[in-house]
Length: 302
Image 1 (cartoon, rainbow, N blue to C red):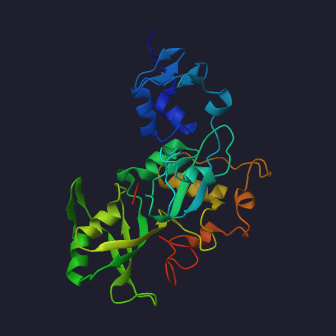
Image 2: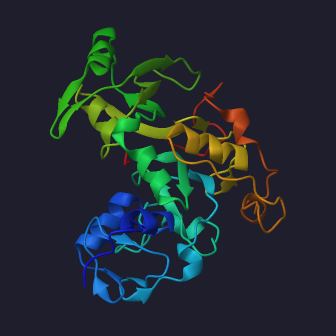
Image 3: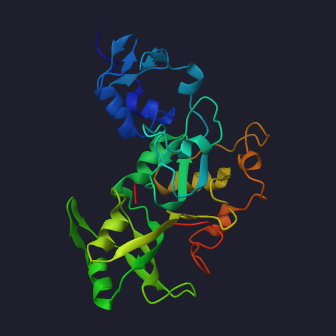
């Protein structure tokens, strides 16, 4: 039986349904884990609303395949958590601390390694996650970094010009020295900005200059900064307007204004944090006014 010539691309349908970013869904298809009408799907295949789709031999519910309103949450990741859904070593995962989502699942927009803390973003829209992570959209990532070792002006020029890593060239678009009271003769804080998300890229760029990263905190992803009132291990929900701000920034269709009822517009922060909900719109392009780890309890894979 031939693949449907009409319909929507399968990877786009399943990404939107929350089975991962488009790249992750493509890997599922390539591995033969997706079926359309009981036939193993091929990459690039299209599907119709009347088709039966299975992932790992489990039928995908019609309610999940239907277009969902895009939801986005901010999460303050502590050190010691991994960004996998399950960890073979039994370590704590970020997904264990996220609120339940109906007819979908959370997809991480980028990753942070075990020893990095700070801002993580999650969405139920796999296409949004894919575009936010793709290098062609040049989404800025901002970090506060504590460096152990001497940092010279010449070194900073090199970091901005570019260094050769084992997987290609990398550089910081911005490097700013944060003069804080907590500094001493061997530890200095810097704010860095880059537009890529290679594995451990921030650490590797600094280590290429013979210094060590002793703490690393992601403070901003794109237009959204880590809210100062968001406690570690807690989440905060973006509003409909803020979600559309993200969709527009990567060229995706905007979501229609929802019926503003408690069911239609869930506020996950009420069930996951004892703090009053802060407004992340007030933290756009923010930067710490004091120590970058003060009040945050410590510092895609960085």
